[in-house]
Length: 365
Image: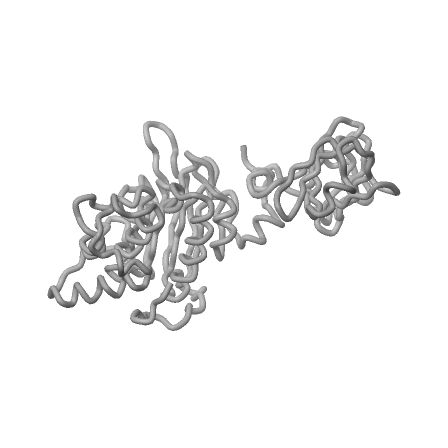
């Protein structure tokens, strides 16, 4: 995106950890006896990009709408730079909102949609509309109507409209869910680049874990109205706090067993793993082994199994290896090896990387 005419911030500001730009404090919301949001608290630093990630019904959109002012919480507070905005009208919160459906006015042009909430002299409004259109690269489309635009173009219009009032916080509710995969990948990179250049604090909602991991400084994984874990993409992927996060983020081999010297014993097999300090021998544990951390060899020492399936994923092939106990273990290999080295039915040995495996907690049910 070319933003030569729009210079709000030359670079993304460093997060101000001492004072959150956006703070959510013990927010709860109940709908017809269902606790949609359950005492959720978290902070965003100025300029930070955080994603609420979870399945449908986990409460992420309800929480976003509470922050925007479109829904009232039953308890808790929303603060912007220390100011309580919980009871404030959406228009006064200095927050821009991009809806999942974009919510464009079908009878208004692109220019009219972008400038809908702008006030002031006509010439100043026109300059601001042109500025924003150039920022999101739709300046050639200002005279068109929403039905004349592609999904990606409509998303850019919705984003420009959300930025028109110069908000301090940008809120986005699954804005790419209706786009095809190729366009989503392109636009998410452009979106992240744009908010970085503007230095704008951003809270993003999605059910797409790949999108969340690619876009975010931090990811908040939600379940049953609560945040199960919040951390960097690397944290939630490599060091999941609970079994649910381990299973939800990425592909997992979850091994339940008991603690023994050197790892976890399950079904007569010892899975190598560095046990946490203080774990007593025989304690019940769950270990996480990602497919990319499970080595495979045609023979030698390791966990014996037979290749049952091979799924081509582009750069990698995902092998399903059936152990003698009946467990299916997934292991990733470079796809150029797939045809010759790893045919279905071949006997192999697995060599899990003990330095990459982690113990995960069961977490709340």
